[in-house]
Length: 253
Ligand SMILES: [Zn+2]
Image 1 (cartoon, rainbow, N blue to C red):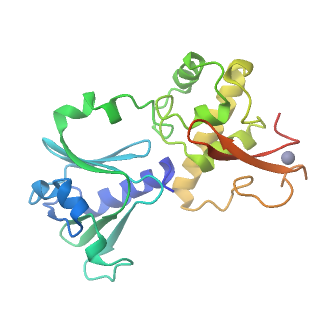
Image 2 (cartoon, rainbow, N blue to C red):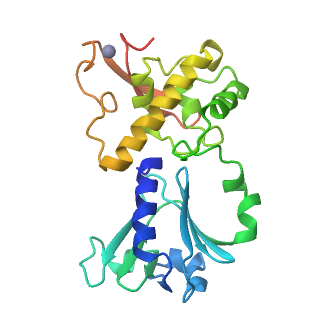
């Protein structure tokens, strides 16, 4: 599953391979053709931007918007390298001078006018990116303070309108690091609690961007006792989408 750290890494890889080049665009799978991505063929890719879990490819007055959801992915290959999946399954193939970027699956792939990005319903309401270099954590805490007070912490952390980029893994890990029970209501948490859990999410995700792995996971999908205190690790669904959260019954209160 692509959370903000995965997307930021993809953005860097894609930008390094393709920015500043004239891009040949192909859509082998009908989903890419339906998205109209062939309109981008021959244009220069000016930049690749990420906002939480969203990727935006800047082609001047047109923008390619990608959201990978649970199942999608971008892969970057040197020219003539063997792809891990068949070309016919690719929704988008962006070919630069020496590399091909290939996209498979996911809920969103579309082309929109650059002038629409600021008012687009999917993009305009996103909260601050938890990985933004200039993130103002106090602003994010204030957004949580303004949210429905009966919401559970674990559910609110996934709300991309409060802050963008956190997914199921780092929701659980950040609550564990801050020793907070993800089932607690926002009304029962102090500003310090919120700062601690949001700061932990940011720190863990930035580390994952640099390290490119998640081997330091301590509670997510943990089988067996808590690595910190030996207590029981539980899991359960939260929020309207019933997304699974993992926590320790003893050391998260
Ligand atoms: Zn514990």
